[in-house]
Image (cartoon, rainbow, N blue to C red; front, side):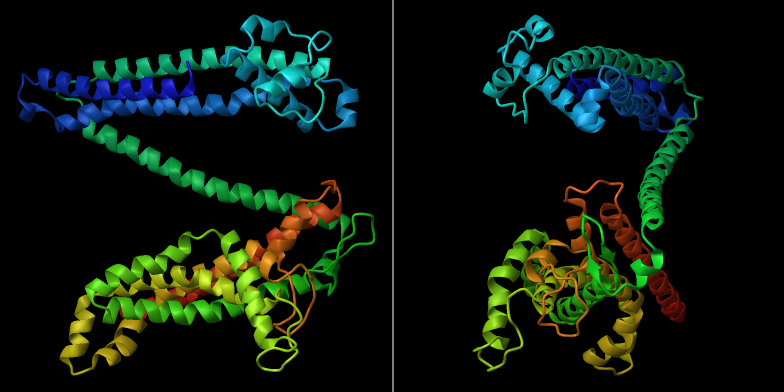
Length: 489
């Protein structure tokens, strides 16, 4: 049974259990729902949750464990010569690709299941046959890879069958237990609330564990980097010149400078425009204008960053060159090319406007109307009310919106790559090309370097540095928010 149909069966059982639980509860009370401990709906939800929660947890655990078990079994079939020529992960990737190709060939009728199990590279051009059905393989399929792929298919098929049986067994077991335990004295509401509380705790734990996983993955690889490269040279070095053949200079200072320089320009564009737009939309615009202007403004948030990068490369950059370049409108020679800090900063600021505007608008609208009415009742004008009452009351939220916008600016990559160039330098001239930390993280991880080399591990050190900087900014913002919030409580 496929995963989709298995989920449909589980949902169907849960729906049937909902009605079975209600009916059994009402029947145990002699048909009078007033004799029940809880509302009839709670009994139904208890049965549904007892079907859904254990079966879904079992399914998720199986989906996580099965690939690990199969890979460990298949790894024993790979020779050391094949691993020496490549890596084990690449060999296993080829095995899975061939196995998926055989499955596709069977499902499309090109092969029978028996043929897929017995095919041999000595008698058949496996790569050609799979290529005819759209499975692209980078190299010829060796006999060893084919045998491993066939074993992979058999193990995966057996695992899927066991998965279906186990999940259905758990679902039916939960259904039977919940229905049999249903009676008029059963505390269904309490049990449902406990189950929902557990689900909420699990959801929060997943978010926390994900953050912890990201943090520790950065820490471990950063420690490995500093074993190979001096920390003092990394944090205080003024030159960024990686070389995969040795002799690299990996100073982060020019990257941090460009990151903050571009972010400051972007925020100087986005914060005033976004905040003023939010004030207008929330305090001055008519409902008709607001209903049209707010969605149009928020359309900017849905534009892919690659489009902003093209806009910076093809429109903003040439326009700035025509103004500040040689022979430009101002007769200056400040800008030599379209890729520059100011280009990326301006376009990034345009991209961040909807974040600042939308969040600030929601925050300003959340200010109690009683503050507005009290200010106007004391004789203040509308503008004085906005400046002296509404904005101070909304300041903690506006600081949060500013921080979110700053984080968006610091983490942007595509606009920097296409609008600011790839030069790592320390300069005060905003019309020169520079690059940021995030752009260099991408470039260091997309090369051919071994992950045991400092040139590849430096990407994790760069990411860890940004993580710590962002954490520091959040702590400062939390202090500001608490200080001003106490004033209005």
